[in-house]
Length: 224
Image 1 (cartoon, rainbow, N blue to C red):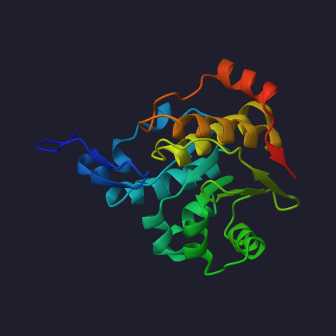
Image 2: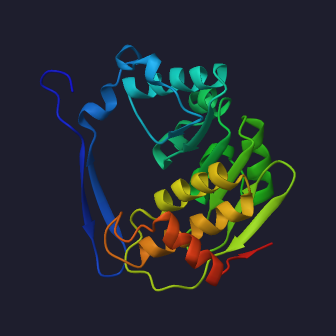
């Protein structure tokens, strides 16, 4: 933290009908400078990016370029706010991205398309090799440029949806890193997201690797 800066925080106003309002204060989250990152510590095979704004977004762009030059793969989970900025703003990061994860609304904002195949084609043209588009409780689509996989999540009781997208994204990327197989990664993402929405809170009941492996063996996700 810089002198006088405050950490970011969020307040989630939940309702009994699954709608919610999130009040977010970004604070120092927006002020990360490229010069503050120790390049000697950037020893990884993967970087996972989520939404950063302001100075931090410019740093994220530089980090993406650094990753590409150093054969580090990037997974990017975009937000609706950033998706609204369009490919001109996100282009540098997307050109360095291996896995791009977003929801249907964000995909429409970025591509100006309504058809899922058109959206995937347009998103691939920006650079990412693997794209996952989620559609809330409905089906989700994952494309590797050659094959489009469609998955149908199970019908589960929804307690709260906060954190479901993040749970899917993190678990999907973990699956790709550990197995290199899209279908296995989809299974992991779906099961962890469904575990999260079955409980209050964005991080409650996130599954461990051992737990999710057991569930995947017992309860397969329909993938075509």
